[in-house]
Length: 332
Image (cartoon, rainbow, N blue to C red; front, side, top):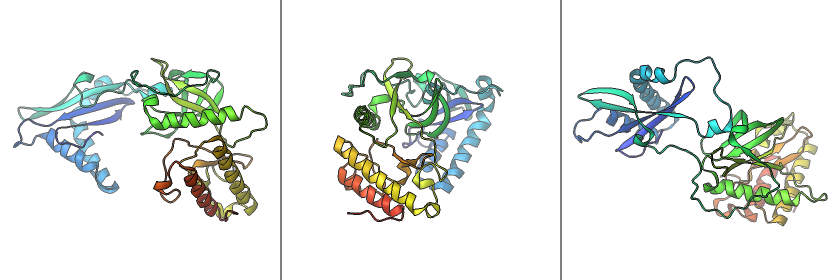
């Protein structure tokens, strides 16, 4: 949903595997509240509500919209037995059908509109006017977003993280629909490239999943994401946060603590900051070795203090907190 003012709002949802957006514009009459005004008010209440109230309000909104829109929606989204497309491009830039809910002469109805008549500007891909200093490495492969096949969505919303298949390889993909306009994607790519270059030397081993490729927008070939090694999880869990640490042998938690410290030290020697260091950003493989992930920056309360975010001191604080999480004390 897109809300926050009294003039307009919109609601986006899936109906029979089709993405539908309903635009709402406030009545020009400030005295008479029509259905659009009521829905805009409810949407504004929903964005500041707690979880319980949010569900109640959004259920009410969707019930109203479906009562009016079920028939027109069914014309463009009949019940289908075929599976929707699973490529990354369709996930990041889904085909959207725009509608408007409007009251005329006291009667509310929902009808199709053109994208340029909608409340929100459609997401058509990265802005070609964006200027970036990022320099990709020519020898790293590029893959079109339509050729990246999604197996499992791990994170969606602000950016997309998913397990994907490219050719015969399973990898992890991180992508942003706006591409390098998103500073966190650029930051992560810069860090991953620096690690990739360092690991080209046979005597360098850094426990960070290897960068395997760039994802490019199928239309313009602009970079919108990265592909890196997929780490098969250990029997204890995928990340440290997923595990029952009390059930893990002490010799393993000691090994993990040492590996984390060693890896962060190597990153700092390269001038790379981990950034959002925390237990959920440490994955453990089938051989019970750790790998550090997520170089997009930021900080998480309880792991890194805000004033130390994106610094070596912040990384060192994260290592100390993770070591304590593992039931160990870092050796000075």
